[in-house]
Length: 345
Image 1 (cartoon, one colour):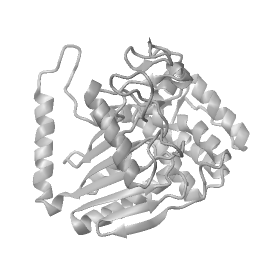
Image 2 (cartoon, helix red, strand yellow; image 1 turned 30 degrees about the vertical axis):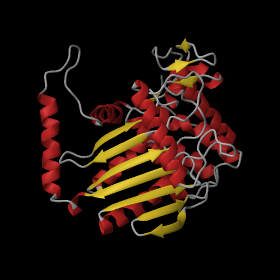
Image 3 (cartoon, one colour; image 1 turned 45 degrees about the horizontal axis):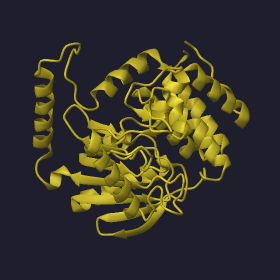
């Protein structure tokens, strides 16, 4: 399995996106966000996405040079028209608007309309936490890949959400799909040639399977947490979608690729002292670390801490790319006339 440094992978990715017609600042930012997902260990939202993004560019779904603009604003609420550019660019613009509105009003909400895939939500939640805000990001994903609790036909998308909370030791980030696992994980397992754990996927006949490719052959993911996860999944299928003025997945006329996103922020300083808030958050962290760990575990971790550990390791050792992913990246380099990625480790 090739190991590639984050710097190499970012440079290659940026050159790839510039080849699509994206201006340098757009290409650089999209590349950086995807590689940061790899650094945290979320390979399902990393450079594995290049193939799908570039296919969408060729299909006219992604407009590489398009920049977002404010569609309308009312008080502490704004709706952003992302104009079908790269979703990460719309999300970055939306976060900047959200930060200003939250600092002005104490609480704010921004919806992203006409938005493509925005990448890993935890990155945006962490950014808001770094700005001394409590952040919540929700996406109503396109397509129907998740079965409802008690059903065996796909009905909704994976519909993720992420929270970001500032602490004295950096953001505490909770980021997960409301399906039992992100759909992109199936690509990761498939590229590695490994079976998936039991209880993740049903095949097209509604039968349990450990073959990751069955998801893309009419299969479906299960919701996490039985009926509770299904309830959250359903809320994510409605709230960000409808507030962005989009049709829900599965509805007649719904776009097959749209990723309506809702970002919320609370300014802690409008509620009380930021230092007190972060001190209490740090105390919660320390209390968790003092808890006796379960058998086989070294330490009770808080949300975001596993990603911190993986990031340090991958910064030191490089980002592992499955052979299939490596071959796809080299093929994209040839297709788009970009110098191939070279491994130096």
